[in-house]
Every structure is written in C-alpha cells, then in structure tokens.
Amino acid sequence: MEKNKQRDLRLDLIRIFSFFTVVGVHFFLNSGFYNQTVTGKKMLAMCTIRSFFIICVPMFITLTGYLMNKKQLSKTYYKGIVKTIIIYLICSIIYSVYRTIYLNDELTIKSFLTSVLNFRGTSYSWYIEMYIGLFLIIPFLNLIFNNLKDKKEAKLLLITLIILIGIPSVINIFNFDSWEWWQTPSMSKKYIKLFPSWWSSVYPIFYYFLGAYLSKYKINLSKRWNIILIIVLVILDGLFNFYRSYGANYVKGTWNNYSSLIIMINTFLVFNLLLNIKIKGNNKIIKNIFTILSNACLGAYLISCIFDEIYYDYLNNWIPKIKDRFIYAPIIVLCVFISSLLLSILINVLYKFISNIYYKIKEKIKK
Image 1 (tube, rainbow, N blue to C red):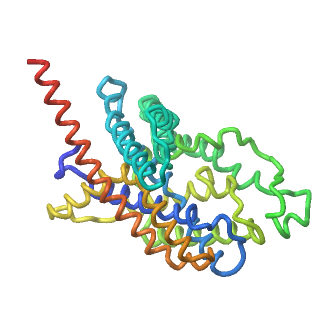
Image 2: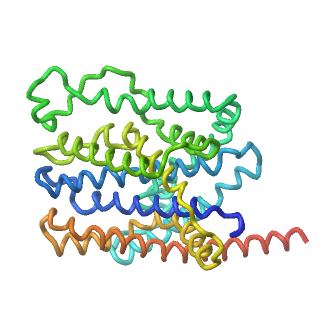
C-alpha cells in the first residue's frame, strides 16, 4: 500500500464515489423499480437517475486500469490478489452468519464452500469473479497498451473496442419491420441485428484500457463542458429508456447496461471530471479519512447486500406502493452507504490482524 504522503486523493475520491453509485443503482434493484410500469413523471425521473448511477462498475474498472497499467508479470504481482480473496472470504462468512441467524438459513460447511466457489458468498460476489479474471490478464493487457507507439495508436485501440462493444448498443436495438413497435417499443424484444455484437460482453477490457489511457494522456476538456456533457447525456439516456419501456416494466438491454455506448462515454466524462478536481492533501485528518474510506470500498461493496436486505425490507413493508418509495431514495442510499463502509472498516481491521499473525508465524518459521 502507498504511504499517505504519496497517495493521490483524487483516486480515493473516485473509488468512494464509485461505491456510492453502486449503492445508488442497487436502490432500483431492491425498491421494486423494475416491477413498476413505466409511466408518469416519477418514473421518468427515476429512469434518468438510473442512467447516471449505472456507471458504477465501469468506474471501478476504469480506476483499475488507471492504477495498474504499469504492472508486469512477476510472482509479486500475483500475490496482489490475496487481499481481495481474503476480504471476499471474510464478507462471505459474515453474510452466511447473518443469513443463518436472522433469516434462519441452513448453514453447513458444504453449502458455505459451494457458495464461495460459485461466487455467491454474498449477493454481489459476481464482481469478484469478474475481477479475478481481469486481474489474471492485466499484465498481458499492459503489454499491449505499453507497446503502442503513441497517443494515436492508443486512441485507435479505444475506438476499435468502442466499435466492437459500444456501437451494437445503438444500432442493434430497433425493429425496423414494425411501425407499431416504434409507437410502443416495450411491446416486443424483437430487434433487427445490423452490426456484429459478439464482443459486447468483454466490456471490462474497454474500461481497463480507458483507465490506462487516462493515466497516460491528459484530456483537454474544460470542467464546464465536461459537466454540461454529463448532464445532457444523462437526460437524453433517461428519456430514451423511458420511451423504450413506456407502458411496461423497465426493459433492460444492451443500450442501458455496462456495454452501452452512452455509459462508456459517461464513464469517461465523470472519471475525467473527478480526476481534475483539486484536493488539498496537506491535512493529515483529511488524508486519513480518504484513505480509510477508500480502502473500505471493496468490502463495503460485497457486504452492502446485508444492509440492502435489512433497510429495503423495512422500506418495502412500510411503503406498499412502489412509486411512493422513490422519495426515500436519498435516505436509504445514505444509510446503506454509511453502514456498509463502517462494517467494511472493521473487516479491514480484521484482515490486518490476520495478516499480522501470518507474518509473525512466517518470521518464526524462518528463524
């Protein structure tokens, strides 16, 4: 870990913000939003807000590319995944104990090990499954990126990935054979494919290279235009998603998931905006707060499912009508955000304790 004096607090801010967007987008998952018919001003507003929060995972992956684009093949590099796995195991144990005590789930050694190996140790463990794979190929991705001749070739790499991953999300999403479909697109999920889309699922590669690019090259975009573009894109995306789902439950597709061209652009804009925020790092208290919260984000992401289950169960029982729950989004999101970070800070203390014991035993064995 870097020493506090060497830390770039902007990156800590990006990590904390990224976790906040994760908690934000999970409001839609847990509040019943996806089971609500898309009509009216409230649903239009929520579709638009979702369009902003959905940059959550892309932001995390972009940050990974920003931080790890210089990593090379070595034994030391592969040891870097150990902490992630241990944090995952600790979170899985806590979640299993929680479900056993409070939800009366049956817990056995077999069921626990199966859930961990299936990456179902917590409800959001899929991220660990994705990250482990990304971690393993990062040195090879770096060989590609760092052997590009110049900025032009780096741009061509990103453009190529945008064509393979993002372009299908704005072309292969319409049904040109039916006028009725254009009037009510939610009536059918039949779309006409006009562009190759096989590579859409490899979106983590794009976001990794995006982070590497932003680490190496400066983007000449004013903060004013950066903010304006974010607002315009979020509004347009929200309107489009409202239109695509109007009269039915929210329709999910390539145009509103992580491989979406709009989300690719918005991730770049938000990341670049936060990267250009000036944070005075002279105050040791501020440094320590940023460091502690930033280091807690991975565990908070994994363990936030506990607080999602607790808080949303209360909210959904207390407010039967789904649309009436939306006004409580800021309160619920903040509660989950803070609770998850606090528990994750304790998890990091436990990890440090386990790590210290391990190294002490290792030293004794050497002697």
